[in-house]
Image (tube, rainbow, N blue to C red; front, top):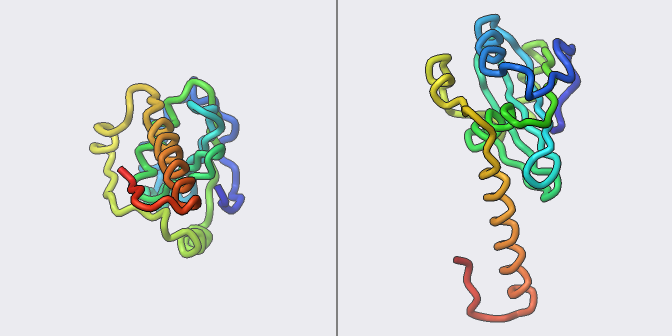
Length: 163
């Protein structure tokens, strides 16, 4: 993730040892402005995600499947980042930013903005109980399908359609 370096609040927290649901709820309560980055050894390589906060409100999310060069942003990324917090092997860093820096960050990364209104009550409902590799498997499957289609397309084989 291409995010500005903020003031580190917590670094190198192990995903296996930290209760991120309560950490997120505390950051919301404290009107936190900044971001949380999680880097995991995922299903098929290194994955990295971030959640953006502005004055205690979750305003954005992004997730990267590094091996495949795939970045997901916005609403779709939010649940994937929450999922990553439950990974067995990963680290979490929390950085604070000024409100002005966050505004600048979101101006350059508009696609990260989410339209979901995340309240503590609904966060508790959608927060995963355990890590799932389904998001990575979906990305891998999509990449394989695109690759097969592109091979036929480049070869000039007519009549091949995506399923």
